[in-house]
Image (cartoon, rainbow, N blue to C red; front, side):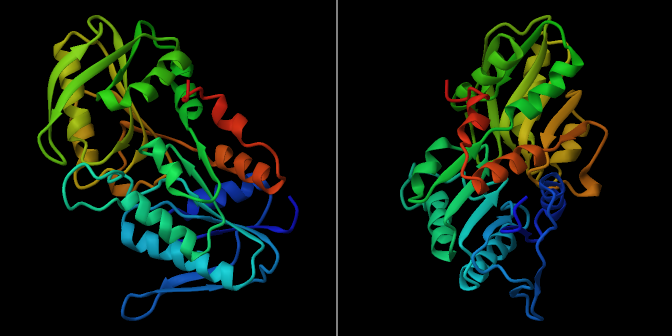
Amino acid sequence: MNNSLTVFSGNANRKLAEAICEILGVQLGDALVDRFPEGEVHVQILENVRGKDVYIVQPVCEPPNDSVMELLILLDAAKRASARRITAVLPFYGYARQDRKDRPRVPITAKLLANLLVTAGASRVLTVDLHAGQIQGFFDIPVDHLYSISVLCEYFQEKNLKNLTVVTTDVGGIKMARAYSKFLEAPLAVIDKRRESASQVKVMNIIGEVKGRNVVIVDDIISTGGSLVEAAQALKEAGAIDIYATVVHPVLAKDAAKKVMNSIIRELVVTDSIPIPKEKMNGKIIVRTIAPLLAEAIKRIHGNESVSSLFAQADVEA
């Protein structure tokens, strides 16, 4: 790669950044990202980036506030060091669940984060599987929105599962599930549920045929795991045989990993957009890397080539 390209990382997912750099054939940029004694984020870029094309890899994951501040301060440092172009690479765009004002007196945190990124110095954003596609419209700078569908679906193609049905856990996920259904050449089913709180849902009906079939539940985020586990139980009671789940972003808050381990879900296939702590990993969690996808996107952005083909192949917009 041209030596004008430099990749930096905060502490949120350094392993993914290193994997991206290995594919690109570049060294991870030298930057100090630690804490002052009282806990404030301390950043210093330790190499010359004047006139360079800089990419900062940092998902907004646990602890999300620290991740955000590291990202913003790295962006500011690169801007003040006279980088030519600064791309914020967010494998997981956190604070995305509040993307509209659906109740009185609530914030739109997805838009707030967009404003912060631009103010801090981002001239472009590269992200993966946004919680809501309209978040792209919150920016007045270019946004490249990639999809991990090919990475996740390849796993199930390799397993060669028979009588497969793709299931979405809510009506809002039909568009995403339809893309998986098309990719895997499998019929689609929908779980109709009612959300009783931010972390609790109640399954109402299953729309589609799952009896006597293997199923793959698809979603973009697993947080507490309650919704996924309850959906799997409802599918089993409806006559499903083996139940798999694939989720892009493994937030796995609190005891979510334990819930999955103790559930009837055979495997939970996720990406490495968010690192999973060793204490949360178990035999049911399968991690597939999105490093090649992000590396190819960075390579194309740096070379002023089209990135659209990377997400067009997923056919998510169809």
